[in-house]
Image: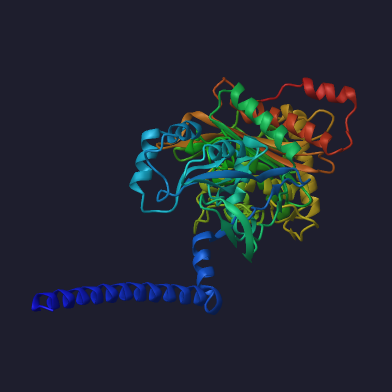
Length: 579
């Protein structure tokens, strides 16, 4: 064989060997890969099968919170005043959503939001996994949203606070924010009691984020505790109706009414004007948020005269039959003059209350001294917190100068130079009504009679009640007579205080009283701010509200009428004097 032939044969053998080596290498690598993969499959499924399960869990199992149900607020007879109802919240996972999705147009229309803003938010927060789109909507709307089947759009259940009585109980109950945290009223004062504890659970979700199955409960949600208030919703409604009517009729700036149970200190009704609807806060005005019965202070005026009279009787220096010379119908203290409507001359103690004599009561105060009067005011709860636990309570001012000036003693006797809120005034009259015992006030239902503190003798309170009876039957409070029931009370008319001091043409009309007078069941205080219809005295504006509210309230409470038909008609037809 020639050299050329030998070279060709050797080259063919070399090429054939290289091809065989390459083929073997490829087969070997392939077999090695298959072996490694096979081993890994065996390892994952037999030796270390937890890995796949963990990776699957990471992609499909989530931990979700379980919202706690906020406690229900009810009146004293378990009528609901604040409840939480289940609603749906629409949210998005921007990392899954497509801002260019055509169906977002329909979503924006359903949720009543701007489409361009929606797309911008999804694009802007594309790195996030959660944003709210619309919170706390009706379940029917949430169902329509899910029917659009848009990637990254989900719903979750939450709760929304609802107030069945609306504006009637708004100032007492208050309201919560969107996360059901108390913001005003009882909702704020008892937020911790009413709030529950959020729970947590593991759930299985599909690739669209929908919950397929609840897996395990990590911690169950703990619902908030219910709260029964002392409020009687029936009395609250009628008090609100009458107060709203008188404010509208007299074109007044506002008003307040407080009703107490004489024997327990429970608040049965507490209303204000203006008010607001906690279910619709779109037109909410900040000035209407205050519970004025507790937060707003005023000078109580002539409603303090019966308390000063009680101090005089308690001192032993005066009796019911004592007389006071009020001639010539006024008293001067430097540049300051105290006047009566006319010169009443010599009057006994009852007539001073019936005629609402500033001169008469101030002469008594000058004799007693300011400390004696102030001491009784304080014992009745004036100038100090009521202990009711309501947020924003104003304590008021009860002066205590190191040395009383004669004019200070005089004005203190008829309620000037001091300030109270309507609830404090009602508490003071409660002590007169129940025979001299001061009970702690409460907005929460009491299941047993609380322990009270005696601050006045029964004899003194009985004598003062008889004077208050006369003030209603033939004095400045004639218009306060509540139908078929006897009553006692006192009118008050005070100048409102403005930025520059007392406003000459702006008044607060007040009436504080109790009924039935022989065995009082209820105490009610009515105050109307700045009536503009021409009438502004307490006997003209506030007393008729007391009459209507107390008449209906006593009937609702099944209190037996005391007056015959003829007596009630005569009382109803009597016209009130100014006071």
